[in-house]
Each structure stands twice: as C-alpha cells, then as structure tokens.
Image (cartoon, rainbow, N blue to C red; front, side):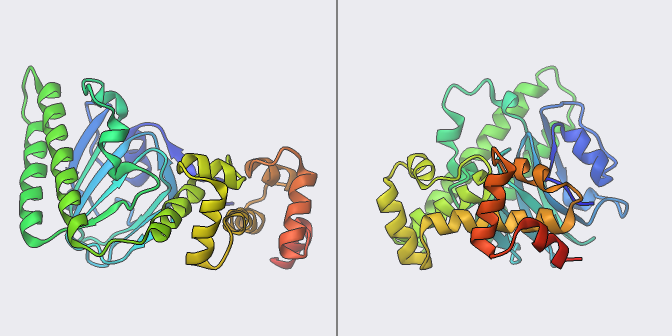
Length: 296
C-alpha cells in the first residue's frame, strides 16, 4: 500500500526511519558527513517532507540522484542544494557518495533579527534549489562545512551559540556564491523565470490551490500575465498545468493506494467526491472507478 507523502517532524525520527545510527543531542540541529552512513542506512527514499531545513554539499555523487519537486538532478558532483519544510524530496545514493548534510529547524534561527525567508531565498519553493560549484568554490565551502562539523563535536558552554553563528556564516557564503554564479550563467527570460517558479509552486501547492489566481497572487502578478507566460514557454495554459498535476497525483493514488475514491477525493483537496469524479471524467474520459479497474 502506498499512501500520501510521509512527513517527518523530528531529525532523530528521520534517522530512525532511514537506519542512520547517529542521533543529535540538539533537537533543532545536526551536521554529518555522508561517508559516515553505514551499510545498514537506506540507499534511497521515496518522496517525503520534513519539518526542518536542509543544506547539502555533494562532493562525489557516485550515481546519486536528488529530486526536489519537479527538479531532478543526476549530475550532483560539487553541488549544493537547499530544502525547506515545504519541499517534496526524494533521493538515491551509493556507498561511495560523499559530502555533508546540515539539518536545522526554524527555532534554531530565532536569534536572527532579519527575515529568514526573505534573506535566504535559496530555500524558496519558487526558486531553483540546486547550485553547481567551481573547484575553488567547493574548497571554500568545504572549509565552512568542516568548521560547522568540528564545532558540533566540540564541548563548549556556548556550543549552541557558536553553531548558530557558524551556520549563519555558511548560509551567507552560500548566498554570496549563488549571487556570483547567477551573474555568470545565462539568465532565463522573464517568461521562463515566471513559468519555472509557477511549476515549483504547483508541485507543492496543488492540493491547497487549484485556481490560477491563487498562484498569480503568490507570484505577485496577474492571472492574464501568468497564463501568457506559461503558454509561451510550455504551450499549455496555467490552468492546464494545475489540472495535469492534480490528475497525475489522482492516478497515483488510485493505482497504488487502497483508499476508497471518496478518501482519494479528500486527499486531493476536493470538498465533495462528486466534484472530483466530474473533474477526473472531464480530464481523462473515464471515471475514477473505471481508471482504477483498468490498472488491475
């Protein structure tokens, strides 16, 4: 049975599920090396969400794959990526995958006087969350991760405060690097950028938001402008993109879960099962029941 995407509330809860033997003594923070993972730790995870942020530096991927919402990356060597509690994430690694992972909860940043979400847009749903690094940039980043790692394992009466300041330093280094890299690579057109951010939002918000105007407001534009941009880039309207994502998830639930059709309907955010059935019929020319029967 496959049901809705699992969500992990605690860092140690996630470690228990994946078979990682270590545990953090600071519930809001942890840093570790990927080469510390034992052969008993999971080598892949299906899509999930978690109530904490993540910064990952992959040095040697050895065929590792990371999927963030609609962004899939199979070229992870010397790559940073950033995850927020809103992202849907899945991954695959090998025994030789190396690098660092930092987990932290928003509470660990209570000391920060600025607006975290505004300051560090690398974690935004509507942005590209992968950052490819040059060799020189990798060397600088490794120093930052090593410093954070060392501080975690150094007993100190001000350990939390030191870790907080070191984490803040790391994030500003990441932000600075992203800004420099952004200036060097070919920029997306205005339409391409808006469409990219729209698709990322749809991947995470299609259950809650089903109208084009909802996404237009989130992206600080008009429904007409959003539709024109999406149509120009994808050849489909924004409404068709939203509907397509809903149907994709509906088919997954109907095929792989044993929830009855009314439960599938509510899982997808429909107020009434009849509304879902009409929508599904309109989009696929078959009822949910007919589709499920055809998949047996």
